[in-house]
Length: 336
Image 1 (cartoon, rainbow, N blue to C red):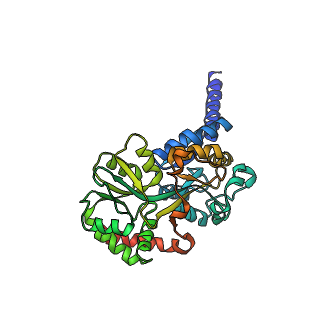
Image 2 (cartoon, rainbow, N blue to C red):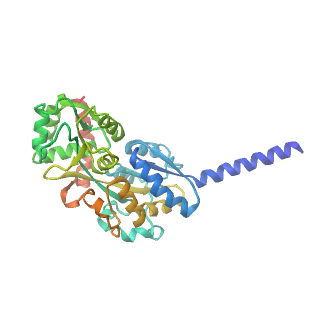
């Protein structure tokens, strides 16, 4: 009798564990304030609608993509929000589910330019600018344009108190392309300037959280950084910090959300939450990024902080993505 009871309890426990696993949706999120927004905005909406829990995996796009590739039949992450390059790689590897518009009602409010380029596989959540965050106490009048700024770094004007994204970062190839664009579309010239800057770059960063910690500790004075994260930091009482987009404009990038193949159906609900107008407005308030839902109306205190698409330079991924591996290889050979 006792044996039967024990077996019965084991079965119940196994069933409960399985049910819990089915209820827990695993989603990706970059660390720091991005994770805060997922917890506060996306997860709140998702749990209110489903009663289920979220597990948030922090990290970087390439790591998430590798984990999904390693186990596509039972993916360890169900919904990914990745950099454009890794989103394209995931789609090319047939790891992403085709979107069913009926399952994402908010899609009707997202302009086609934010999902049509993904071929019905992914949807952009927001648009960010990659500009300059700086210490106003040390650099009260930063140069207005990129070329002057770069030449000032090369001349040692800011000492070795500069931090720049690494070519191996998720958006590192985008940065390399952007450096080339500053100098007439010449990647060789872009690399030449990066190498000339290197003696004054304290760190070529790969984690936006770590470099923000370094900036907050005033270990560096000038950082190529995301506008949303920068304003989030400034607005938390750090009035000594400033952010701007040098002329002729900053590098603009998007982050796309996608359902991984063989993931739970609840993934569609999470994606709809991430694209919902009210949730997107709160996401914009948290991250200070321009969001993609056309129904969002920014409050006055946010209008001057979110990126203006007309002021951003957007990389043409279909034409350039095949060059990324060569740029990263060159970075590893020439910059390390």
